Image 1 (cartoon, rainbow, N blue to C red):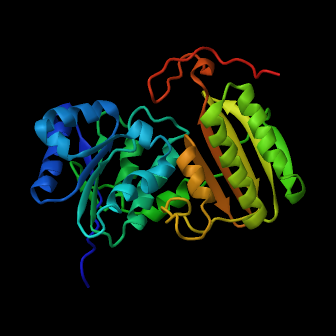
Image 2: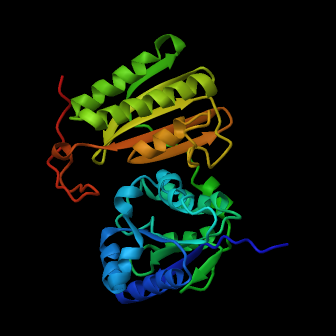
Length: 327
């Protein structure tokens, strides 16, 4: 049996110099082999790589992961597959850093599931995806879970078994609902109210223009999925937390495919795109699913003027204290 051409190593780095030298060596090896190469890492590390590459940086496709991968659920379709699929007949190299010390507790489970699902999404593909982990700044628990989601380790001895499927299921946990959440039960007779309620709540918190349209589309797709695949009815819940507006829909369906919503869809082919749209447009998506119950929670960063003190946006903007929704 031929060896799997897909390679997914984790590299545990100790400092900036270690990071810059190792990442640029990986990229230059790809360039010398004539392979397409890409980098998606946080901006500080992107700067380190650019400086070390020098003139070679022009040959590397570079993305700020805090923007392109702000929702871990969009990294496979919009970052990794987007680049790999442009070169279907060539081996490609990608550096992807979806987990860094600034990630929040609400984001981390989705990050860990993403790292695990890479192994299934690219199985058999001629792709190498190198994932750097800050061995000094990240917690022992995060580093241990990286061992479980990467078949190859560099810079660290393995102490935990490679078990990506267990990581996916381990983070598939029920999500607590705050008592102050605004709720709406819906079915086919009042599906339009889902869009109206979410829009009113979002507009009251300052959402406008394109971002308000994105939110409307997301809740519309989720509501339609509940009607078509989730038992014909569902419940919308809306609230704010930690500088984000949360729109959640629960129904009695079950998502059995863990890669649902993470595969790019050919626009020329018919088929459902609802969960993919949700992943592409939301700032974070969390999912809990089992037989008889699916909860999909989407997060949207509040406009800058409504961010609580101490909360920072991925784009670096500073916020002011949260205000109550306008009537």
